[in-house]
Amino acid sequence: MKALYLQGYNATTERLSMDLKQPHAKKPAIILDLDETVLDNSPFWAYTMLHNIPLPQAWYNKAWSEWVNYEKAQAVPGAKKFLDYANSRGVEIFYVSDRSESQIAATIKTLKYNKIPQAIPSHMLFRQKGMHGKTGRFAELEKKYNVLMYFGDNLGDFLPIFHLSLAQRDTLVQKYAADFGTRFIIFPNPIYGSWENAAYHYQYKLNYSQRQEQLLKELKVFNPQKMSVSPAA
Image (cartoon, rainbow, N blue to C red; front, side):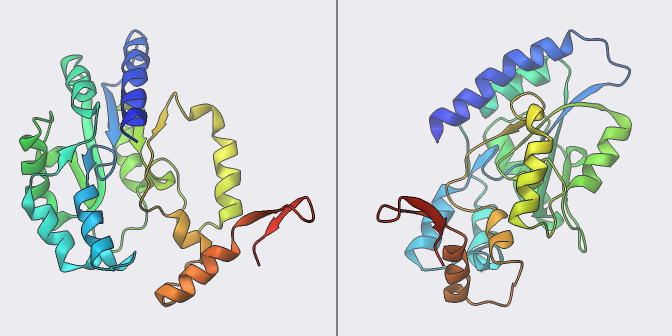
């Protein structure tokens, strides 16, 4: 995971340098997710594992707010170096997160703790009540800036995926295949992702066991007796 973060940010530094050599009608900008893209929350996820707190309940657990208010989450490898470079080149840096607006102040302190640039309220576009996805916030920034790159650990950090099925998500990825690694920089997330919601068909009222059962049904399994690959159930 650490190596992939370094690989992503290192390769992107050169790509950004190339993009900035091109003429732009509007000021250049980049957009980044925060959790598992700039900030490493693995100590919090370790807490949820030890205390058997499943997703998505973990996001609404009191411990999540306490973790945010801890204000000492570490930056993922390579993030600060890359963002310092972008800042030195006059690029506007926006952090578009699904953290709640009430967590902006604590998040700014966390970014400043890591000496991450442009950690100011006007560059924090956090989730407001009733929001679904990030594309609306992206559109507002795209009106004012030439957004060169998007960074995230989840498909929703780049594209409108709200309530799409797994098959529809696959189709969307193929449609934008050329953008990954150039305009869309995606990082690994070994803990969670919106794909889980799609796998159990957004049936949020299912309990943990029911969700696990649905997730297993989506697996494609090799059968050595039949020499074939087929759904698990």
